[in-house]
Structures are given as structure tokens and as C-alpha cells.
Image (cartoon, rainbow, N blue to C red):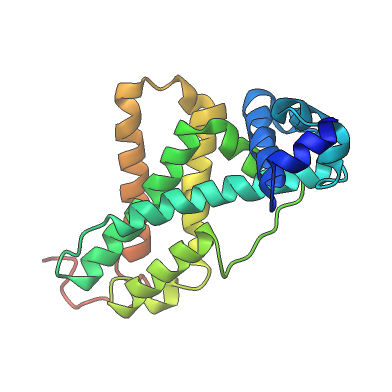
Length: 218
């Protein structure tokens, strides 16, 4: 009877989506180990048999939950990116867009720590694709920095990974490390300093470029 109810209530993948959403809630509450097909079925209110039609085991469900977490991160970063106004200076706009992406990343980590932890948990595979997802937004913005002359071309290769490491490391330090002890009123200053340092490192003068004669004395 329960399976009949399931078929009449969920259509065209709705049950699968509901199970993924339930898995996300379970992960938020108990981490990756809390994600299970039977537990998600109970959360949704369907039989385990119905749930197993969509996910053979907890591993498959956890992968889907991690995919959903990356979608959440991507959507937040894209929204923040699109909200950056055109400054009239393409280079300056690109710099502000890169900063917006970094701040969006940190904001998701702090606002939805369960989603963030699950996305990068060691348990469950991660389908990583540089051509799509959060990293693609960073890569495209960095290409814009080079095109507008705000980033030396020699510094561009793999720079998106450097930027990712900075914001990810800071996020983990705030969530699970010593920065978790920083008072909220001081945390903004920490984030500002990290972002400023990272942006200066990416967009500052090319250290390999010839020095300007007399520049040290000017």
C-alpha cells in the first residue's frame, strides 16, 4: 500500500529529488555518516523499497547529496557574481567580480556549514569538472582579468586553484579550526584582510617584469 501511495504522490523524479533533499538534511544534522537510503526514506515517508529504486546504497545517495551541495555553492556564487555592477572600467569590474566570488564561497561555508562539510567530505566520490561548476566561474573571471590587463598573463595558469585554496582554507579554519574562536565582530576584518591579500597577489605587478629605473627611489 505504501508503494502505491508513493507512485501516486511522486512523479517524474520527484521522489528522487525528495530523497536527495532528505539526505541533505540528514547530512546537515549528522554529517556524511548519517546519510542512508532507509533513513532518507523514513524522512520522506516512503518505503525503503521505493527509495532503493532510485539509490542502490548509501554511497549513491551521498554522491547525489554532494552534487546538490555543489549546486548550492555554484548558485550562490553565480548570484553574487551577477550582482556586481559595471564600474565602467572592465578591469576594475573583473577584480570586483573575483572578490564577490570569494566572498560568496565563504558566506555559504559559514551560513550552511553542513552543506559545505558534506560537499568536501572524504566519504563519497566527488565529480569534479573544471569546465562547469564553481571553479568555472573563477576561471572565466580570471581570464577577464588577463584580457583587461589586470592580471599578468604569466600568473594566470592554474591561478584558480590558488584562489580556491585561499578561500577554502579560510572557510575551514573558521568552521573547524582556530579561527572559530574569533569574535563575530572581528571575523569580517579577517575575511577582508585575506581577500585583500589574495587579490593583491593575483593582480599586482608581474615580479618577473623588468624593474623601472629609479623606481625604488621614487
